[in-house]
Image (cartoon, rainbow, N blue to C red; front, side):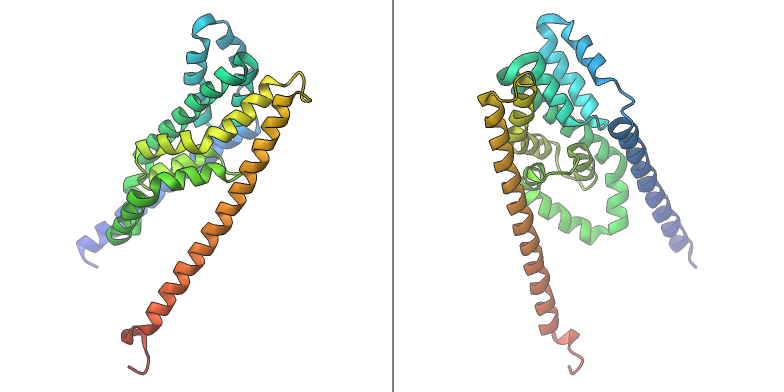
Length: 244
């Protein structure tokens, strides 16, 4: 084995170990914060409320940071509605959501982008860059409409694959707007879930869920069509024809 080949294998192992370590760290953090609930969100909310007129700005910053370490966005958004009402609270929630996307995306870029690109190779990395340039923004928007996926985790992955910060920020703002209103409005209506505002929030949530299901279905069909097209092109290539 040549010296260059040995160095390449060592480099790949280091890159893989780095990505595995980062993934393990995120999984442990997700468990501690989102499952074990080691952070007392109610105490944080009470502390922010005591800051007075600047509480909305403080809540944006604190929620952005908490969201990046996997505190559930539904809890943060509901707290925003409870503290600031449906109107101001929705904008506070959106600001925090964009902040979380930027923080997680930057950390994902810092921790995993270089290693991921080396592992997948220059050709595939170039193809991914081209796809990101054309569709990166709408990939972020689409992910926000899909229920059951952690926005923070998705932002870490997006960052590791090289999606630009502006795409994360704009995509998070556009894609999170419906859910920001839903959870903030429900938080504001916590004392009276029969209020018209609560019914409006539920209606928006249902529409968003339907749009997410449609987006998943269309994305899957598009992926199948592209895969079928590649197979057909491969079969038509004489180099792949056993009789050629």
